[in-house]
Amino acid sequence: MYASNALRSSKLVSWKPMGRLQQTLAGCVERSGVGLHSGKVSTVRLWPELSSRGRYFDFRSRSIPASVEYAQVSPLCTTLCMGGFRIRTVEHLLSALEAFGVDNCRIEIEDFGDKENDAEIPILDGSAREWVAAVEGVGLMVATDLDGKSVEKMAPHVNEPVCAWRNDSFVAAFPSEMVQITYGINFPQAPAIGCQWFSTYPLDNLVYSMQIALSRTFCIYEEIEHMRNAGLIKGGSIENAIVCSASKGWLNPPLHFSDEPCRHKILDLIGDLSLVAHSGNQGLPVAHIVAYKGGHALHADLARRLVGVDNVY
Image 1 (cartoon, rainbow, N blue to C red):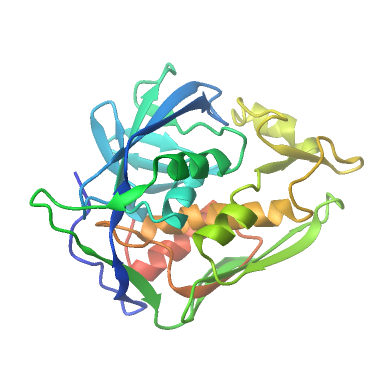
Image 2: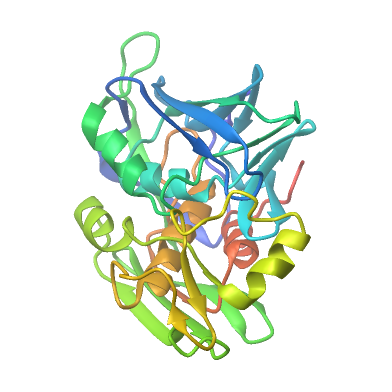
């Protein structure tokens, strides 16, 4: 039901104490909204959890750990799949929980769609802003076990360079004393986006909330019909995405940042790499992570390489 308490062994990472205790939420919070791809409404409740339980989804009495073992390649989002049950678009929520140190959390999903084994996390405004507000609103507390004992939090430190790539796209992690992320994107078909780079150092919850969490998902207007014909973005709208036309530029300004698309990629990356986490420890590797034209599949590939695991869904 839960991830093993044993730290995953890999020559690429070393698990080291962070000098602080595992945390959880100080109370329950709830958010409801439409799923970006399904177009169906769901309600998500975030519950406090015991230490070493980690983060996991609770859907129709089934538990799916927020772990890379269960990450499934799917179009335009990250999906967790286990025992025939599927949770889509988990990356924004997990990004906020990882960044704010919500190490142990039961994520209960009440889905109102027509598929009994398929749920999707609400897209909300397309960013992680509302999840950050939910965490800040309820606050955090030290997580303890059934005996009231706390557990020291561990973090994965990258020992040597590791890279996942396809053609000219890549995501790499280099040894570093602190977490730093440098991300580049390139959309020559949409000059208003073009080539962008953004780097954050150091990455802490203040930097995350002010510079990353507000960045919304984006799309190219000329690609919308194709995506909808493929059964995607049924719940997409100008209320939960910024839309760029190849010829007309941004159709629903203003942007929160001039390089908002690039910053959103970092938001996604943090959520995807949070899947390295287990047993209430940190997921985001202590490394300088450099990415160019990456996406959810490449992010997950890097996570798997770091801890040496394969899919088991």
